Length: 244
Ligand code: F6R
Image (cartoon, rainbow, N blue to C red; front, side, top):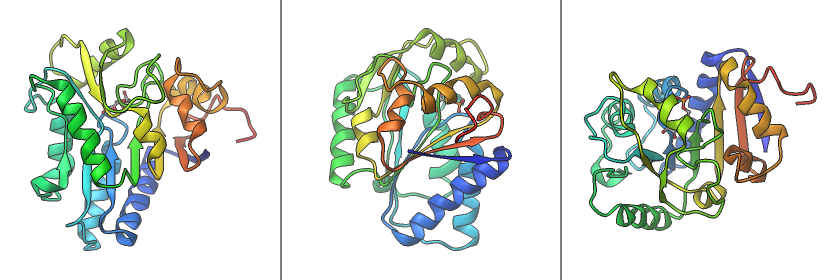
């Protein structure tokens, strides 16, 4: 695992967007899996801009949505689906065969998980995973205690996730379960970027980078990934010991 520091959110997002765009140049059939949320917002915007401006062929990429709140309509502006659809899939005019998002309204959620696992395996795994980190150290909806060997799964959301998650919605939401890609896929991904910005993420970044590797603090799994890169701005890095 490596750590890269940036002056601010703009620089961090610019770096992540360039890394992905250049990887698509090198491998036009790149498989990209990404989180939604506040952190990757600017990265996606810059990525879309770069792909269009530089006319980088993205007609063969595959996109995979990392997770979803169970029971939410895709039209809900706080859903991951909405984020992926409006920020990436529509602007890049991805064809239906080029992406897969969890259907969190499906009657059989286990089948959704199997569908996702098969899709990832058929694509020979994920090339780049771009994830954020929750205030409880979660990645996707891999909540504290979730096994590092999980494939896609449905999980009872942690209290912190349910309360912090309210920020995405215009009115109070009853959040119960999440459906998410599991850590087995993360460990198998060829490259993983975990991004964090702002002083509110300083504590969880310290635990991720300097704490013990434990399922009780999910993001610590990054220490196990040879090609894992933590991208942080100065504020999120503010509690790290000087040696990084
Ligand atoms: C969302 C997701 C979550 C977020 C995390 C950080 O798709 O996977 O794990 O990445 O909760 O959220 P933000 O970026 O809003 O601070």
